[in-house]
Image (tube, rainbow, N blue to C red; front, side, top):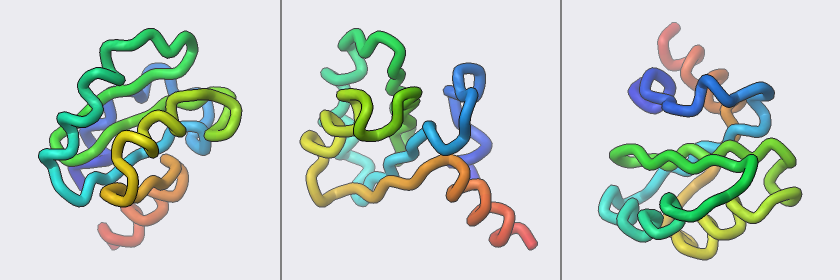
Length: 95
Protein backbone atom coordinates (compact mmCIF):
# COMPACT_ATOMS: atom_id res chain seq x y z
CA UNK A 1 0.00 0.00 0.00
CA UNK A 2 1.61 3.21 -1.19
CA UNK A 3 0.12 5.23 1.69
CA UNK A 4 2.12 3.19 4.20
CA UNK A 5 5.29 2.90 2.11
CA UNK A 6 5.49 6.63 1.28
CA UNK A 7 4.96 8.08 4.76
CA UNK A 8 7.36 11.07 4.89
CA UNK A 9 6.83 11.64 8.63
CA UNK A 10 8.19 8.35 9.96
CA UNK A 11 11.20 10.15 11.47
CA UNK A 12 9.06 12.34 13.75
CA UNK A 13 6.43 9.72 14.57
CA UNK A 14 7.00 8.73 18.20
CA UNK A 15 3.47 7.34 18.75
CA UNK A 16 1.57 5.74 15.82
CA UNK A 17 -1.75 6.83 17.30
CA UNK A 18 -0.68 10.49 16.97
CA UNK A 19 0.04 10.34 13.23
CA UNK A 20 -3.15 10.96 11.26
CA UNK A 21 -3.53 10.07 7.59
CA UNK A 22 -6.14 12.04 5.68
CA UNK A 23 -7.21 10.15 2.57
CA UNK A 24 -8.60 12.55 -0.01
CA UNK A 25 -11.65 11.49 -2.00
CA UNK A 26 -10.43 13.67 -4.88
CA UNK A 27 -6.65 14.01 -5.37
CA UNK A 28 -7.16 17.59 -6.62
CA UNK A 29 -8.24 18.55 -3.10
CA UNK A 30 -4.58 18.42 -2.07
CA UNK A 31 -4.35 21.96 -3.46
CA UNK A 32 -6.62 23.09 -0.61
CA UNK A 33 -3.83 22.14 1.80
CA UNK A 34 -0.91 23.92 0.13
CA UNK A 35 -1.33 27.13 2.16
CA UNK A 36 -1.54 25.07 5.37
CA UNK A 37 1.70 23.28 4.47
CA UNK A 38 3.53 26.63 4.38
CA UNK A 39 2.45 27.60 7.92
CA UNK A 40 4.45 27.06 11.08
CA UNK A 41 2.62 24.45 13.15
CA UNK A 42 5.21 24.40 15.97
CA UNK A 43 5.48 20.71 17.00
CA UNK A 44 2.81 19.57 14.55
CA UNK A 45 3.76 18.60 10.98
CA UNK A 46 1.90 18.37 7.67
CA UNK A 47 3.09 16.52 4.58
CA UNK A 48 1.03 16.26 1.43
CA UNK A 49 1.15 13.24 -0.85
CA UNK A 50 -0.60 12.49 -4.12
CA UNK A 51 -3.89 11.40 -2.58
CA UNK A 52 -3.18 11.76 1.13
CA UNK A 53 -2.00 14.17 3.77
CA UNK A 54 0.04 13.06 6.78
CA UNK A 55 -0.53 14.97 10.01
CA UNK A 56 1.77 14.60 12.99
CA UNK A 57 -0.30 15.64 16.01
CA UNK A 58 1.91 15.01 19.06
CA UNK A 59 -0.72 16.42 21.41
CA UNK A 60 -3.55 14.46 19.81
CA UNK A 61 -6.25 15.56 17.40
CA UNK A 62 -7.95 17.81 19.94
CA UNK A 63 -4.71 19.03 21.54
CA UNK A 64 -3.47 20.96 18.54
CA UNK A 65 -4.63 23.13 15.65
CA UNK A 66 -3.53 21.16 12.59
CA UNK A 67 -6.19 18.44 12.41
CA UNK A 68 -8.95 21.00 12.84
CA UNK A 69 -7.48 23.22 10.10
CA UNK A 70 -7.20 20.29 7.69
CA UNK A 71 -10.76 19.21 8.50
CA UNK A 72 -12.05 22.74 7.84
CA UNK A 73 -10.15 22.97 4.55
CA UNK A 74 -11.36 19.60 3.25
CA UNK A 75 -14.78 19.38 4.93
CA UNK A 76 -16.56 16.20 3.77
CA UNK A 77 -14.04 15.32 1.05
CA UNK A 78 -11.71 13.34 3.31
CA UNK A 79 -11.56 10.42 5.71
CA UNK A 80 -8.96 10.41 8.49
CA UNK A 81 -7.42 7.45 10.30
CA UNK A 82 -4.51 7.19 12.69
CA UNK A 83 -1.34 5.39 11.65
CA UNK A 84 -1.92 2.46 14.00
CA UNK A 85 -5.28 1.72 12.35
CA UNK A 86 -3.89 2.19 8.85
CA UNK A 87 -1.02 -0.24 9.40
CA UNK A 88 -3.43 -2.83 10.81
CA UNK A 89 -5.58 -2.51 7.67
CA UNK A 90 -2.44 -2.76 5.55
CA UNK A 91 -1.40 -5.98 7.30
CA UNK A 92 -4.83 -7.49 6.61
CA UNK A 93 -4.62 -6.51 2.95
CA UNK A 94 -1.25 -8.16 2.36
CA UNK A 95 -2.24 -11.49 3.96
